[in-house]
Length: 130
Image (cartoon, rainbow, N blue to C red):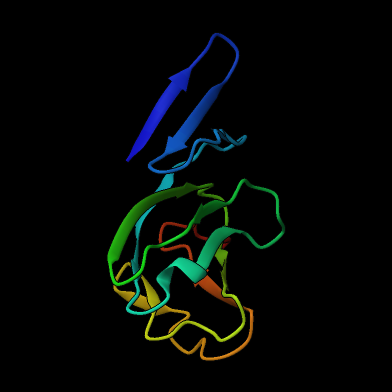
């Protein structure tokens, strides 16, 4: 869940399980979606982050627990056409683990190595000139 902490000069968002405030960007944090993390074994060794490809926005990050489904809401700028997903592990990939966002699975093919990057379309991106 997202909580807003508004002061006179700025707005920050705090994500469930994360103590670091996420600053509000120039366009606002208007695209919110649930990230479902599924793990079976060694889930405490994996982590993920989702952010802007050009690193212009704060990332949404999490560390799932072993053998559980963990759901977290992420909010990112609406003006992005897509977002970058980075999945990390201690070195052997995600064993039977994956992320599910808007019904699509990510990092499911992360079977070896320490890091995998994938792209996720922004389903609410503004339409280009047409």
